[in-house]
Length: 612
Image 1 (cartoon, rainbow, N blue to C red):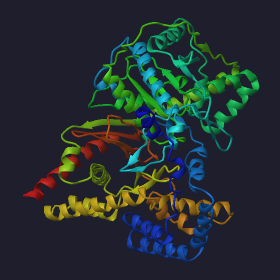
Image 2 (image 1 turned 90 degrees about the vertical axis):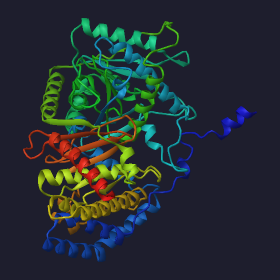
Image 3 (image 1 turned 60 degrees about the horizontal axis):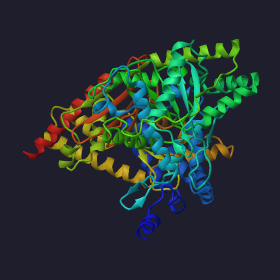
Image 4 (image 1 turned 180 degrees about the horizontal axis):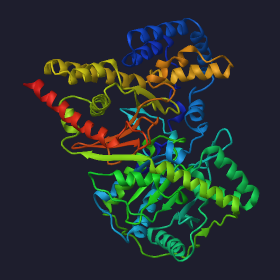
């Protein structure tokens, strides 16, 4: 009886989805007031005055009409933004997504059980696959704990997009295919795809009703690895997924037209739980320097990545692992969750399999042999060339700051995330001599299908503090006061954004309503200050907190003369991964990280002097 009771009160992963509040539409007056405040650091008096007039005119005119239409739209949808955001931020974008949109991250196992070691790729691969499959099974059975903030459940919908999900290229707009089902919803795919040396294989991970074990997975991986090592390299059809979107859509249509069987093979990859990518390279990594593994995760062999899959689990020759994920269906916190789960299991078991060594008689992996011709081979060649050209321009600096971490900032009652954001503002200001418009991700998961909102970290208060730090005549006391004001402002914005009171998504909604109604683009969006302050995806600093676990990630910069700046926080350290483009003469990711670390020290000094 007790057991039954425990079962009945046990929360299911998706049980609160029906009762989450709808995404609210903020007040127009408030949004425009916040917007005006956010452009101040980037304007002189005259420019600001002009923008103020434009905003006033918008608020009293077309803005109010568009806002009313947005409220109408919100009445009929639990999330007025969801479909728009997916299309505008991801599916309409035509640049190659594998390099320019996907996010990547290394698995942290090398820090404990699994240091880099040649000859371990297959055995470790079988164990890491096993833990990933167990996570899939937890999700299928809705046994994954519901994320909460205090007692408030958060939206879990993005977790449905982790497995058996794939983006399909379209001529003008891509689409997302999701084949995941919970056990109560019915059958879902049970195979994984493995890419190795330009070839593709699939095999089932469930045999006679239960998951295949690490020794059985090892047999499958060994079969694939030996076959690929002793035979010629494959055509590398997967490389097409790294191409510009419309070009890939046309190449895919041609591939299907060449032989209808090619569609069946594509569908096997698209519906697979995830793709397991076997690389031949061996990146160098230490717990102080992650730069090389990040570059290899983003810039690695496009013939062993399916860029459109929501999850590519990447395995390197020296027993290191990582992931490359399509950003359209979910945000990085989903990946952080599974990566942490797997890392904890590897730690618990000391990286070994302690169960039965018995290998059942399971079918061997099936190779997916595509029909190709000269045109397809040429398309593959072109795709690889453009991917490698873009990848060679990427500069990543990923280092660990070990002097202190969360413990110290907490002791000072300073939020560690805000601490890093302000240090970055100071670093950018010192390096470039001007404010850097900045996007920090806020989560809106209190709401149905909520994803993100923009926190604009480059505030008037932050810049006033940066200027005081650069002015030798400013007293330490004044610097300290200005720093605390900047902290307070940032914390307030983060809270508002998470509670659906940000303004960037609201402005986007108003712009999209105008477009849908066939109205001219309102002047507010054409104003030079709109894009100079980051609007329309023009943020110089694109940043996000990856979390408080051992998991780290990175994305490329939003703009050519910008940076991607991603970090995670531990008790005793901050880990930062920063991306930039080598072809931009004014950016240098290594320098920005170094300057940020200097800023950490300066801020600590400021806190210590304030106590004297």
